Image (cartoon, rainbow, N blue to C red; front, side):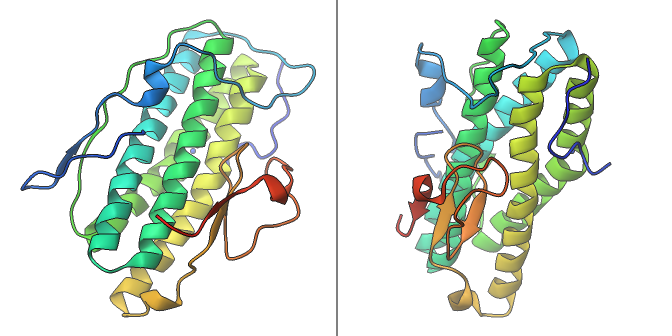
Length: 234
């Protein structure tokens, strides 16, 4: 059966990285992969989880991508703070928090389907904050224009409702992250970083990210705003 999608595609960890002389960031195994307990994802009372090879492969790839992004953005946050861009550091921290939520959701879908969860050892390079923002924009653009739309289509064709929920949470959130990063890069180039927000709110259910003020309810998962994770410091 084809499951309804909140918005089927528009056409797509926890240890700090050590910066070497060349700022090469290589994460140790994420805590999420060291734990044996099952993670959970908010799901409807009745749902279908059809396990097929393609969706399993996609969910494993999405889990790897979000785990790596969470670690990378945490490292980018520290670099931004070192360079004096506190507002951008907070943005990267909020995004890292959101990506970790996406990774947990993807992991829960894999566990619910009874398939293996890959062990992830993120590798990435930390450069200047300007370059890090450009890298983040490139990554988010790929996810919202290619990766998540394709993954959502495959999950829909397979009738995997739980995978679609998790993928849609990430897809909608990454679209907002792309906008935040583009605004931050523009501010950095125009020397107006001090005009950026110093407060971010992250939905604990789907990772949806808001700046300055939390809504009464999340616009994606409908989670109450009082449950949001508030980011005001590093």
